Length: 557
Image (cartoon, rainbow, N blue to C red):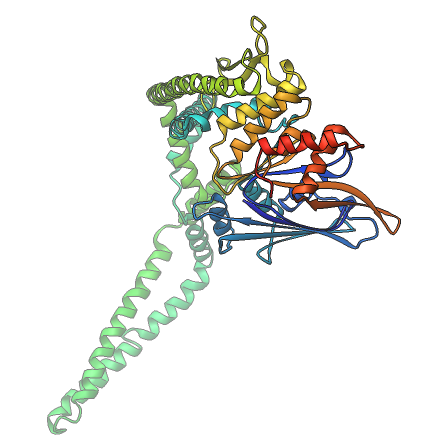
């Protein structure tokens, strides 16, 4: 719940420190005194868009600080932890707006982002008014409100999961069907190209190998001359003969050398072995050079054909084998398209059936929750002097093809204010005063709040008076039990029900108009409610009526 709000140099407020309490808190004052400025300040510190004009004239910057208490299970804790903050039992949010429009935000004195403030604000505060088009009056949100009221989260998630599975099945089927259609359109080209590549049978790394062998063959004459010389130098007329002679001479005297020539002779024997291997390699080389005089022509023909195919298909030569595999796969897809599409269509049908089951179960649960909500609102309307009005949660099927993750239902809250009158949307049927009470009754039913969440009603009692205003005050006080409600009101009946009361007024200081907020004690509160009853001139009768209202309402603090 909101513990305190401090404002410095925002709009008409130069300096303000307010401490709030559990229960029903009320702000009263003349029209234009600046009551809504406090809500603007609270919205600003909770991440709403700021602007340079927020800063009070003559000040370099404006600043708002809000302190909240957090229960151990408060959803704000998870948001803080996810953002890297260490949540405590109290949360201090501060936001600064410079005269140049630049903004800075802090959570427990650590820098924070505007989006995080807005996320936190959604868990800390709910603001409602007669023009609450983002909440209860917005039909686009009615389905989510009904789901929350009925506790249908698991069924909504089941429908969402089934919808995603259906969407994925359709996407897979459509993608494959498009690929098959494209392949069928190019089937003749695919067959010709695939046959051409299959017959040529390109291999990875082939271009490099062919290029290397081509260079070798083109240099064959020069290579053959040098290799022949090497063969002669190593043959019987050269190194081999000399090494054999040396080994023969040493062998003849080895017996007289007492083993001293054993190692040299063994080394010569090994050398002759290595020499023989070298001679064999050279002979093979010469044989290859002389094997086929047309080999170069055939090699160049394959190399040039390989490169031509690569240019034709706009790929590298080494990518031709992969292209061949791709083309073969596309041809196989064409040949097996009937079987493949049949299987994918069956998968779509299965996913559709699963989604229909989940969506139908969700619709049935919504219908039960709607009936329960209608009865609950009816009970709330009677004390608010709307016992003849009828509230109905209307559930209709979404148009064909428009179902989605949240099911196949449209949900709209409708009202009929008089017996026999047609039901219609809240903001189109109800008058201002009726609308206030409908919203309050709805809020009483739909709000499953945590005790430390703050509900704020901005002049939701506008357009009502007398016994009806008293009924609104009673309902607000009931909502505040065990929690915290902050009401901006012009109704003395509502103000009298509050446990904590502040008066907002304009003052003039050093030629500047400022908004001041005063905490009202018992007597000051009597005067303020008397002013709300009688106007500018407060009479003894008005004070007596104020005391009577206060005596019937909340305890004066």
